[in-house]
Amino acid sequence: LGKVYFHRLVIPVSVVISNLIAFAIQLGIFLVVMAIYLFSGVPLRVTNWVLLTPVLLVMLAGYALGAGIIVCAMTTRYRDLNYVVTFGVQLLMYLTPVIYPVSAVPVRYQWAAGLNPLTPIFEGFRLGFLGVGTATLGQLGLSFALMLAVLTAGIMLFTRVERTFLDTV
Image 1 (cartoon, rainbow, N blue to C red):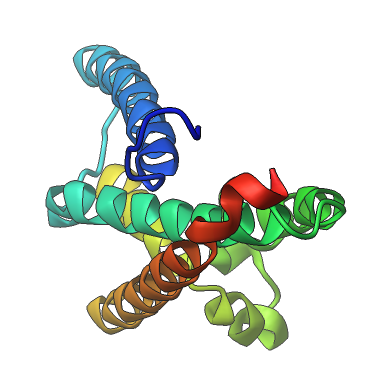
Image 2 (cartoon, helix red, strand yellow; image 1 turned 180 degrees about the vertical axis):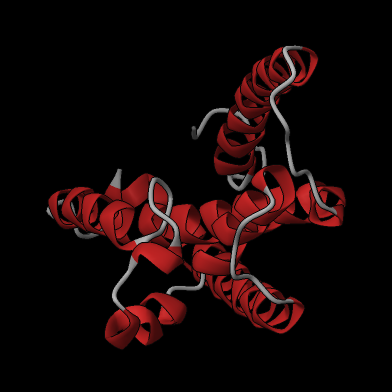
């Protein structure tokens, strides 16, 4: 890293882009499976929210990049943070409605599911491709604003810590 100068932010951005390429391949397979179901006579309820797929992808990539560069900047100094992050990502996976809809959460706890900024994104995917979901444009806008805040904070922290990367690595 010290021999040739390049902007260090290229590394986390390249990871996000490579994962977006993998997601594009998986989305293509998903669309083929949906087409097979459609031609088999299974009724599909695709809604206009499917048009927001690029926006939802950009939001997911923004959250991933923002959180990733925050963790990257912090773990250069605090090595044991890797263990906390691993546990936190697993916990976030269960708290985010990926495999279950928000409607499956008991009514008295749905407010807690609404606090997760990733909830409107996954509910938007569910609403677009499956026709069921609880996302609103207001929730999506709030999630987008929070994504911009996380991304901005991550870039600011990363550029501040970037000067000392070689000393701590």
